[in-house]
Amino acid sequence: MVALNRVAFIGNSLPRRCGIATFTTDLQHAVAASRADLEAVIVAMTDHGQTYDYPSSVGFQINDDRPEDYIRAAEFLNGGQFEVVSLQHEFGIFGGEAGSHILALLSRLTMPVVTTLHTVLFEPRKVQRDVIVRIAEASAKVVVMAEKGRELLRTVYQVADEKIEIIPHGIPEFAFVEPDQAKAKLGFGNRAVILYDAAYEAYITDPNVPHSIFEIPGARDVALGAGALLALRHDAPVRGWVEAGGLADATDVVSVVLAFPRLPRTLRWMVLAVVLTAAAAASLLAPGVDEPEKGARGA
Image (cartoon, rainbow, N blue to C red; front, side, top):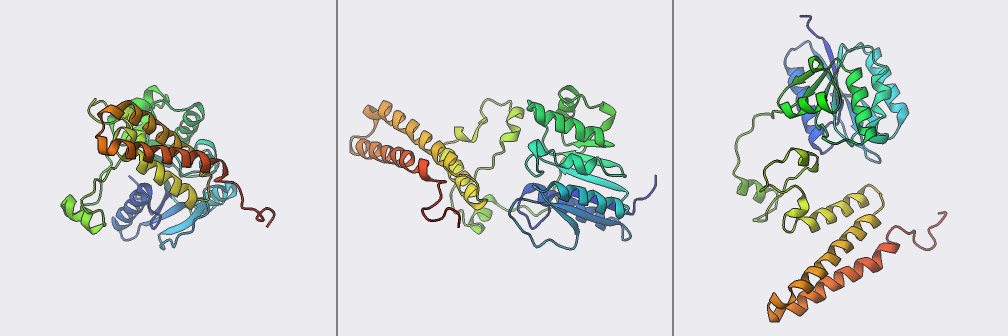
C-alpha cells in the first residue's frame, strides 16, 4: 500500500454551523494528525449570501450557487496534485437541482474520489437518483454508515456491491454530561429539546416513534416558526411559512370547535378566541409578506 501525502476533503467546514461542517472538520483534523508529513485540506462549501472566517485548513471555498467555483475548485485540486479526494455528500449543501453542480467538479478531477453519503434516500425523485448515480459512477468507492444504506444503494441506485463500503459514523470522544446540565448551560432550562431529521423517516420501524415532527406535541409551531426565521435570515420568501402557520392555526380552530363541550367552561371561549385570532392574522398578513414596501421599487 502506497502512503498518501496529500488528501483533500470536499464538504462544509467550521465555523459554519451544521453537522456536515463538524464531521468534515473532525475528519480532516484526525487525518492530518495521523502523520506529520501528511497534508489534509478542506474545500469548503459556502452557502448563498454567507461568509465565514475559515481556518488555514480550508484551502479553497466554493460558493454553492456559482457553477464557475466548482470548476475552479477542480483546477485547485488537480494543480495541487492531491492524491485522493473525499467527498462528504449531503442533500442541500451543493448548488444546482438536487446538488448537480458538484458533478462539474467531479468530472474534471484526475485523482480517485471516495464519496461518503450521509443520507441515502429510500424514494428519491428522478433527478435526485440521477445525481447520486452519477456521483457513484465518478467515485472509486462509496461509503455509507449502515447496512441499510448499502441495501438501498444496491437496489434503488444499482451501485455495484464491490464499490460500497460501510464505515459507521462515529464521533470524537467526549466526557459524558448530564442532559439537565447541558440544557442549563445552553439556556434551555427545563424545556424539552427535540432533535429530529426528516431524512431518516424511511428508516423508522417502531410504531411508537413519531414519523414526523408534527406528531410531537408543541413541535409543529416551533418548526414553523424556525422555518420562517431561517427564511428571513437567508432573504428567502416567507409567505409560504406564514400560510403554513395559518393553515395549522385553522386546524386548531376546527379541533377547538369539535372539543368545545369538553373544554373547561372558564377557558373554552378564551381558547377559541386565541386560535381564531391567530388564524385570522395569518390570512390577513400572508398576502403582503413578501411585497416590497411602497417607494422601495427600483431603489
